[in-house]
Amino acid sequence: MYPAGDPDQARVVLLWRTPTLHDYDRHDLGAQRRLVRRLYGDLGWELPRLLDELDSADDLYLDSISQVLMPAWTRGRVALVGDAGYCPGPAVGGGTSLAVIGAYALASELLAAGGDPARAFAAYERTLRPVVGH
Image (cartoon, rainbow, N blue to C red; front, side):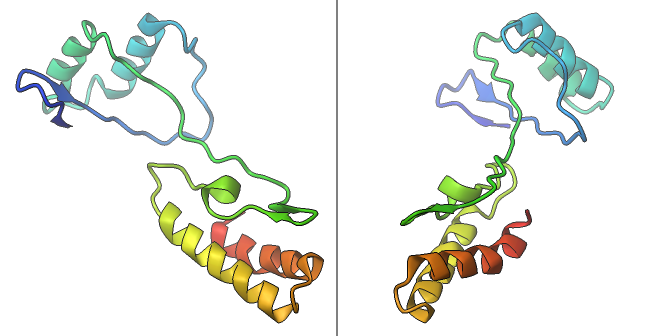
């Protein structure tokens, strides 16, 4: 829960982890509200009051936090680094660290390969994939 700038409003972020995506119509606000109520309705604290407010909220946003898993981060003379290739998702954290580690790994492999991108890119992917967790 955090302030929204207006002293009469607050924003609430709810995150949950599931092994599969939920089946709901992302254009149906009622279905989204029912899903959130089903997931959080029995948890106590201030959640019942917040869920009641959810029914009148006009700015509900519900989406999955997903990571796109790419089969390769390089093609030809182009290499993806950081969020462009392996963003871990905003709720997971570590995106900036992975970007810096990825840039360092790519630069190191380019130096070690004498500037040969094909050799450097293969080494970059071998080195970084275990760190990213694919």
